[in-house]
Amino acid sequence: MAIINNHQFYFLDSNFQTKNKELFSFFYNQGLNLEINQDFAGLKDLLTSKDKEDYPYDFDPAFETDIDNANGFVLYLKLGDNVVATYAAQKMKIETFVSEMKKKFLGTYENINVDSVVSAYSSCQWVSKNHRGKKWGRILDHLKKHICFDLMKCNMNFAIHKESLKDYHINHLGYSNSDKLATIPNGDVGGAGESIDKVYFITYTTDIEWNNKQSEVKSLYS
Image (cartoon, rainbow, N blue to C red; front, side, top):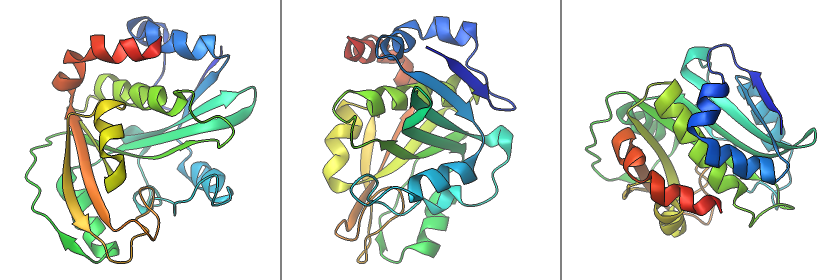
């Protein structure tokens, strides 16, 4: 297994790997390589090159803006040299995210009152259609949370999802909460849903909640 550190600020070094040895052992036993980088344009090119069967969503507009390298990262899971799964995250307050979402996606929004202080928004989760059902996306999400909390020093990680994925985010990705965020008549919220998906939830967890469930989370790696 190779760890490819292509990020200016965040490194998956030996100390980080030791702290999360069960997670890295999972990827090692699967014969996978991991890359962390700051190339959001390259991530967009990769995901938008996929056919709709492989990646059915529009690219998340939150990752189309200029992002300071100190405030975000991209994860690639690789089989050999081929990227087979992705994730991305950036520092962003929930209030800022919801405000920007309202500008881009007209609909009916719920009142969300969450004190996020220093939070990270994550999206762009993709696993190749040829490799689904292997827990790769799930464990990559866990790695993303460790980076958000331990390296970027955020105290909350949040994401959005379509209504049908609430159980997946709580019981498999390890988020602690999932609340209804909005009804978008046209659907097609980038990175989260297709045109048929009208109802969206915001899911989130704190660093303390995440740390408290590590025994449960690590049991998923076997």
